[in-house]
Length: 331
Image (tube, rainbow, N blue to C red; front, side, top):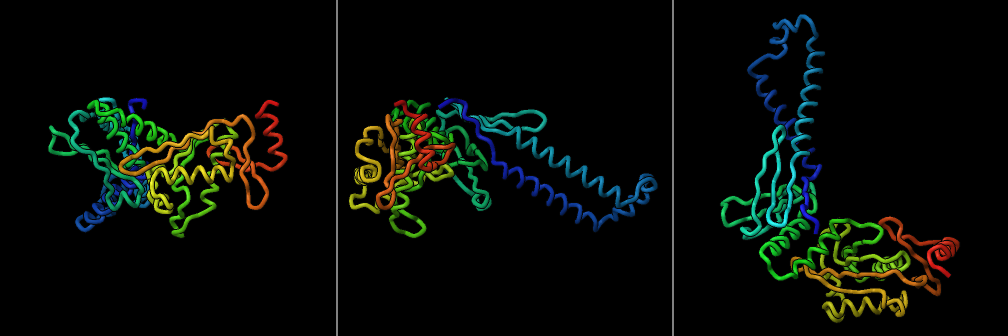
């Protein structure tokens, strides 16, 4: 983990704030209109003799909206949370920066929460309670709040010199924060289709495609039990779909599918470990680059060849496969 970890509020919060301010001003202007006649006041002023009221209104409203948007953006842009080895700092302010912080050694609990509006915006809030403050320290309306919550919890463990098990968790959370790329992919499940509520051979094949692509592309890491958006989903549904409903049953089944679809000789280049985060298991599949081409058995007698291109797994045609093999492996 590289410190500080910088957390920014979601851009959706910026839009929400602008809308709230615009609505509030509109309501105030509407209510005041019952007390004062804006147009008459304008016509009675010296400016009314120079500019037409409708033109003046357009200019004022446009400038006001520009100023409101600019101030709201700068306020949002300047606000951030910094997670350090010993403390979490909240930096905010429009013209002049202000700070408040909480020492991790004083933390008593960390909770991940979502209000109804935050649920709609797909963001969340982290509430940090401490010994020396009656009010919780809030990290509001951020993307990947659940992941950052786990990072802070494990950083607290390190600050309090708790068992080094937290270092393993941090390494997985670090990977998740990277997002999918050419050497990293997430799969929510291995074999359980949550929509149809059945086990799925295509899902199992999708995992094998990714593993074979990593084997053919210099290696990579596959996290099973993590959604595409980087949220911890867990393996319970996969476990329950197996005869042996635990880690060993999961690994045995993965090994069998790998043997059937890729080949037992390539198992030596694939390491499988499990880590528990917030009570949910994640399977970490570490894949080394293979010294020779790897194919996935397709339906029937055919075979398919896959590589990583960016953050996706791509199938190559026969001619593309030959060209790739010639350039990737020395004869």
